[in-house]
Length: 182
Image (tube, rainbow, N blue to C red; front, top):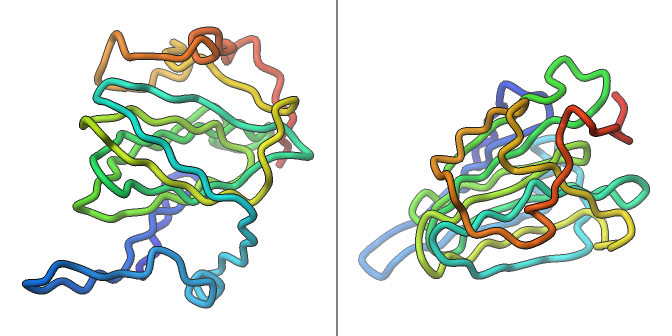
């Protein structure tokens, strides 16, 4: 497993060791001992999975403390543009984001710790997106930033994605008061 730091502290790209031959491939999508050795001593309590068609955008979601979640995200089938925005007050990268393509071919995973808003755009039909969470879902603590907020300036590569009603009504970053502190 290779762990790659991004330009924002805490966000990590994780590339598993993949064994391929004429039969197909095998890799460990999660190994607690390997994660601990990489400095990630995490306890996951919930796994989530979604199926989406091309052009579906989900996000930018997060849960406020005390129900904040870290997420280890990956694509099982298809492809997404995955985005994490730093919402930690006091961080040198507050309001900045990292985006990465996660695909069934590259098998790359993305670690998004607490204190980040997260979202993804589906790039292929029938994409299956999966993620492990460090805390349980709590509806009363969920929140959402507006996906196309001009302050965040995320290049989603799409102007008219398919959105849920919740995502259409996300908060503007300029009106947002973060509960996360560094």
